[in-house]
Image (tube, rainbow, N blue to C red; front, side, top):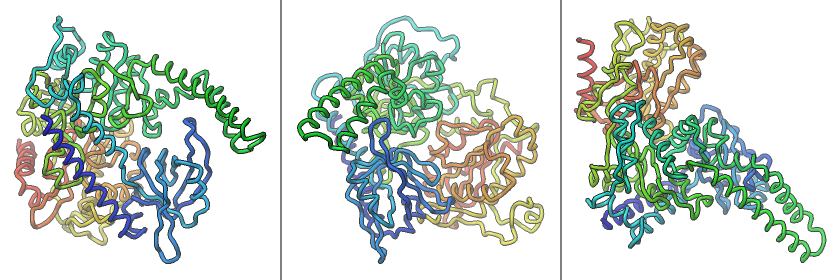
Length: 637
């Protein structure tokens, strides 16, 4: 039991060292322009205005002059560092780290650690900014594992023993609660959660209403408890369930970076609630006075210190009162797993912790939040996306095995699976149902035969072959085949990912033809939404660029999303097109061999799934061979 956690820590250390080594290699050996192309650097940089935000953080605006087609990896919350380039091209890094607060197009707002950092930045020339290694997250995970390993008694030790052994988990005993608006499997899962004293798991395959079940369970739990915490690995997942709870009239306080929160949840963020509190104007005035005293230095040093001390004491009192009122009023505290370590939550405990999308979170990240809870409810699907692991050694050692998987193995009595899906046409569902869920899923009658066109096949496999002359002459005018591209994969410009330009061209042509069959007016009137998925970031960037350059897609741009499999987790679209990319003589499928990713990609489609792939390459893998056979059988039928 303890050995499992020690092993987790060793594997996490390997992941950290691997990422650190990668970062150092990129920092020391990679030229600036290559970093820019890989999206990890902005250079040259223009430094704009600086100011204090509502949280009394010193921030500065920066902007880049790079072509808009250069996509980047900067996101709110990510650590960054600044550098200068001298005339010889040598880089020197400034001796402070900062954090992204906001990013949009070619502009970012950066939180700085001090005025000295701002002075150093504004006095520098030929400045750039680069993504820095996120050591803070690793530090939190290591600390959490140490705390759990060292626990000898108390609730944390008890939960650890239940999660990692076959010790019996306890239950409350009461009559089942009726939820007439839920289906039987959802109602069973909700009651399992309500009865659990220690732990419960809601296993929700795609489209089975996991979020609906979780929201109803949280709502019912709040009849018994004054406040609960709701966490997830990603901000998107936290916001999604928070929005649903808000729609039910639950007072949700969202903790985290406001710029990573959806527009619907902005009003419920701690920062917005803090700013709108009746005492905030008074607090802001005191803080402004403190800054003015520091800047003008009027009167004796002793009198200034006394005045500042009195003002700071009053400011601290007001801030404490505002925080207590905000937290006392909230019924749900919502944040990411890492966000649960926020200083605002220090010393707070919760009767129940709900972890959504638990199958995507490292076990160490889960323990950060579990330390604050008396019982834990996990929801997700361990047959979909796993946690992202970069180190091959950590991956082979099993770092991607999640706490949810462990509990499902050790405590099967605490697991309830949802089995009625409400998303996909039955023909789309049946293949992943057989491959991943042992045929346990059923399509609700409302979606079983759903489709867009009469006599349409819900799934099609489009072969990525070299186009012949007739294909070229009959193609849409918007597609330029005057310089034909050879089918086949290659390295993306970032040197890491993969691209297949001819397949990208075929993908857009295939989608173009299908949309023409439906009709432009119908698509726009019914707001049919479309997702283009590729497992490779390089192909995603290529498809986005090709679509931007083609005027045909302009009317549909609000309806079309292009992203990786990870980017589509938790989402669904009427039409999904998947560009598989891999096309080689060796039959290598790379990380397409992680079938959980393909489970996610396939199950995003409601009514139509188009797969663009090179079967001689892909079908050397048994899973893709069965998928091709299944799609062919639908056409034969």
